[in-house]
Length: 220
Figure 1 (cartoon, rainbow, N blue to C red):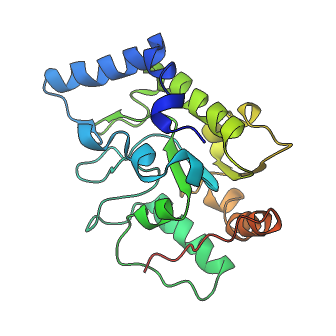
Figure 2: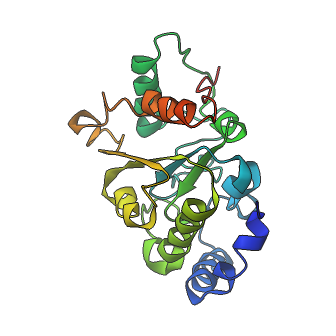
Figure 3: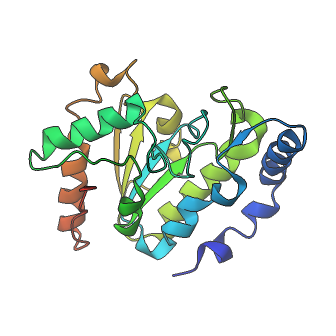
């Protein structure tokens, strides 16, 4: 299977990608804080090789407060207080797997080693301003990433939470992959369909049926 560096060559030459990177760099040059730090923007790609992917979870954009974002959707750096969405994700796992132990750290890096690709629809954000880089070109780039995974990866599970993520459903080949959708885990919508969605068990059932093993969701 090709490497990320191979399949993303054309996407990284696209006007959308070039503009998204230019905007982030321009804002940094002008003294604005942009998250995550430059060396963590592509963490999801570094930590989850294309040939290891078993599950894709799509978030909106990085956390926009200091010290939180580490380049992985819904994940926060060690020692950072859990944002509400992450708390709700862990609560849902606990509901599905009673033996799940709530972790002390909110970093989801362990999932990356399990083949979980934690992709945000936008890879950068301005401090304190959610969705501030939504229209800079990231949507087109991450849409292409989803197409590539759909085309190249073995049968996998896509978890699409909320309208932003669900909008990428048309890019996925559902004859090969399982697509799970629900409300977003944000406190504003978690009680309107996220809690009780059963996605983590459904994911493992699909992977097991396709001979790909089960994901260990434990973080503790």
